[in-house]
Image (tube, rainbow, N blue to C red; front, side, top):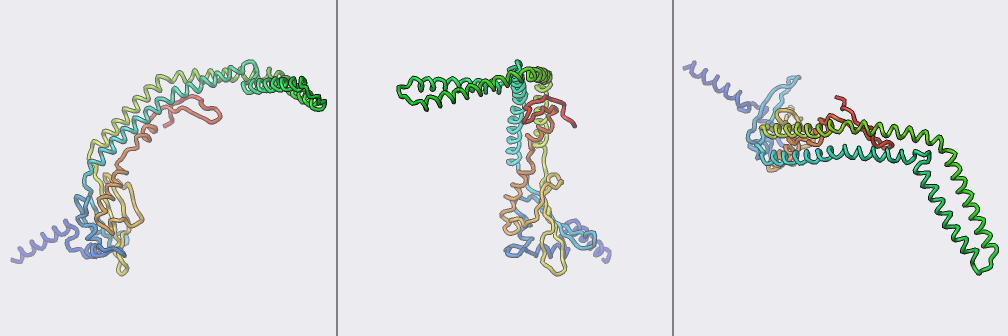
Length: 327
């Protein structure tokens, strides 16, 4: 009879250990505790919470031998969120692929424009100088017409006519000085222009040599990220909420750590008290929001990271060519 009773006690002990929360006073204390201004105990807020397909309470000791109680909610499978996230990732992948595909021809166009601008200065006169000289000539011509009208005017005002002629002479002098300065600088500028033309041509030729590699990289990177997206959303994911409570001797019980885990990997944490500790009905919405954020793949970021070619842009020199991205 004693042996049967002993065996029964051992079996009960094993079952209680397996269930974790069977008789542990620390777990009971936590479940009976609550936050200030909350109408629910932790047990009422967290046991059988909506959105959790399974909940568990565990007790262990920390490094200093103090009791710690851990609550774990294993979330339901949110297939609708997973499918929407998959659609968004594929849509983002399509967008970033188009952007990357258009970047190369835009680079070539920029280099062609750069070469055209360099050639326009091949005679030693820059486009800016030509425009400035042309504007000065037009202004001189327009003022000459105004002075002619003044001189032909029936109004006999010697001061007016003399002033107009003096201003015309000053404009003519400034135009001639500008023209002379440009002609003086032309030989030096021509040498610089020849160097700029050669540099621009070299950059264009170098960029054109990357065309096939670039086009192939756009396609292969898309396929690689698309496969990653398919693999990620095609497999089941576990999502858990884990709350730890340090069990004090006298002070009120409050969560000491709150974190969310995707596939048993921590992905989010909070130092604030979540709303579902005050209102259990908020649990499912909280789980869905965080799962939606953390289960998603940043397709744009993954594509940019995986794309093997880097084309360099600078404000002062819009394009300087392409190179294999350093790993």
